[in-house]
Length: 79
Image (cartoon, rainbow, N blue to C red):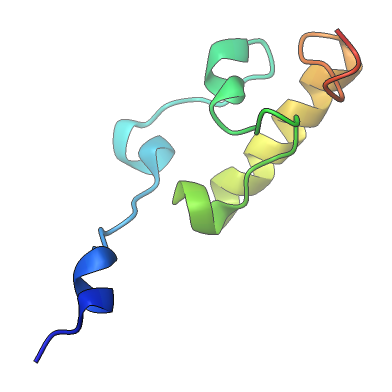
């Protein structure tokens, strides 16, 4: 018998959109990188986004490069 808790959480198979669509991750693509940072400007973990480990490392490096080049702010206070 299913409990109300089981109905509340629907497990959907997460997939890496970079593997599926053969997309490149570049530090210049700020719109793409903005999807993977929170409103507090933290990098979202891969268990939340569903990105594979390889692309999560590349994504984190690209976000850090964009921060250094001032394409993305480091924190909310840096606008």
